[in-house]
Length: 270
Ligand SMILES: [Zn+2]
Image (cartoon, rainbow, N blue to C red; front, side, top):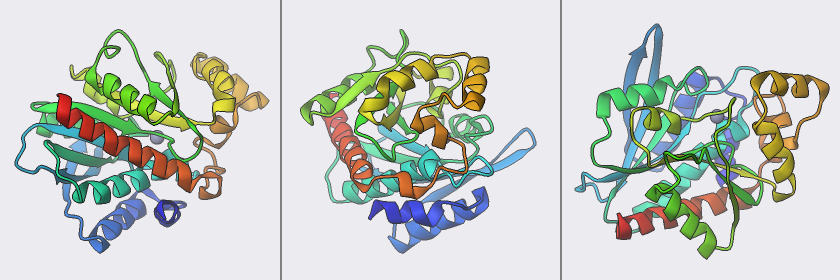
């Protein structure tokens, strides 16, 4: 069960989550490297797993972050992404792929994307095909692909995942720039790599409320938050309510399958 990974990670501090993640990978005999970095006064650790065709320089990055906002159990943000990526690694191990798939569990997303910025500084962007970053993929039936702007609207990361979602008959929406939200995919676009986007899953029935909410200014968001005018997704987000009991095994599996199909398709077309 993918939810079991989430349960192992929730309620833990950043360091405990890092150690739990490493334990899970070791128990499954998944090889990883740790990138220890310092960014200003912050020390952090990214965990990197390479699977697929290890002889290929061309690679696709799939990522989530293991750090957590203090006071929140961090089930959907972002233990859900970690659980999905562990499952993706296990599925990919059984397949023959054209490219290398680099799965990265970033540190320090919440305090300013220091993990992904430090990753790019060390490893660069050469031979990178696409980046899919996962944020809040633990329940729901509708994919949100974001932020889709002039920069990435005709990128093959977007084209590929759209094709997979259409084939699988999964509802999705493309969402534009969001003033108050970002994920580690932003570090890649900021560094000049445009084939990067973030995936979030939500309840289709909440889509209009979510769209209205995320397009607000930071000030309006804070006002709405304290006056209780918030969709379920954001009542849980960064709160003590972000627990595994709200998540769905079916959703976690669905996202894992979509990602595996996307990397297979990218191997044929990019
Ligand atoms: Zn997050």
